Amino acid sequence: MNKLQQRIQQIEKNIQTSCDKVGRNRSDVHVVAVTKGVSSTRAKQVIDSGFKHLGENRPDGLTQKLEQVSDNVNWHFIGNLQSRRVRDIIDKVSHIHSLSRMSIAKEIQKRATEQVDCFIQVNVSGEESKSGLTPDELTSFIEELAEYDKIRVVGLMTMAPNTEDEEEIRAIFKKMRELRNQIQTLNLAHAPCTELSMGMSNDYMIAIEEGATYVRIGTALVGEESEGD
Picture 1 (tube, one colour):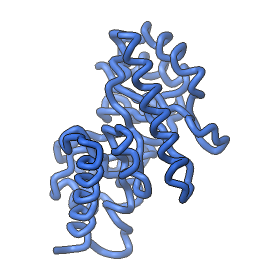
Picture 2 (picture 1 turned 120 degrees about the horizontal axis):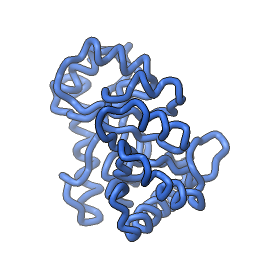
Picture 3 (picture 1 turned 90 degrees about the vertical axis):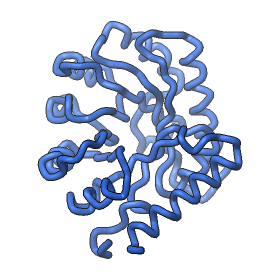
């Protein structure tokens, strides 16, 4: 068993443990393997290991991977997106995890040839270093998206603070789940908002316990390029 397989086995064990702890089905949790820091060769190894969701945070990185990885996978754009770069990723990704500005929505509407599944990014922690809407801005933003028929709001995305305080992290994820539930009660046709994209390498177990349906795992899964497989 190589290092990649060992990491995958440990992550799978951790996911199952978190699901069992709160009575969730493992099938309800999707892993987005974040390949932003590794080569297309490593990305192919991840795909060959059974992963169908891969994530990139820069348009250039996504384009490079798409040129070299032809496998049938779902690409997720997980980074901050500039209006001028929407055209570089649109119709190439299955999900955009960072919609939080109307200027981006307008570009998606202008350039997409089919409906795009989007997560609305919410800055639940209030940290200045993080992008996203405030919780108070969320409802009106989503309601305004009703006029953009190329956008389907499948869920919400957030990042927890980089801290060792598990209770602080858990509180952020719990608040995120509550916000998702509030949007669901609006019964908006363009915003079913069933999904929660939250949790990364250091906190995905907590995120799963609090309801994450997509976890974005980078180094803990794909490793570092310098270490081999």
